[in-house]
Image 1: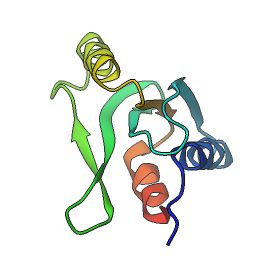
Image 2: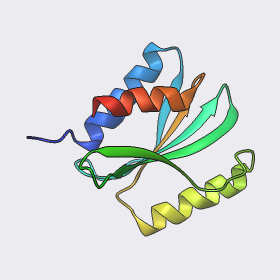
Image 3: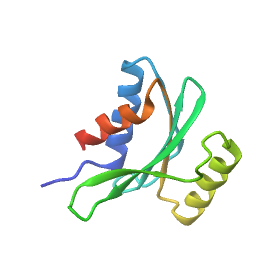
Length: 112
């Protein structure tokens, strides 16, 4: 069974956000085929969680909240993203600004 590429999944999220009246942008492009994906969630510019797609022991993928606990600390979130990018240059970083962004990520993640 073939696996969807990271680039395809990112493009799908960008289109899905636009279709739902939100905004999504690629802040950092990673490996086209197999790069990890980190989504910086915002709700109408209010800070939200950082969600990362990770491989689960069951064989599928899960979305975990990562990074600093204080969601309002944008400097701490930025620093976390920079540390992750320096450790993993194949990482995709997506900013998603839409009402209930984590819900959209969960729905989108279920497709992959």
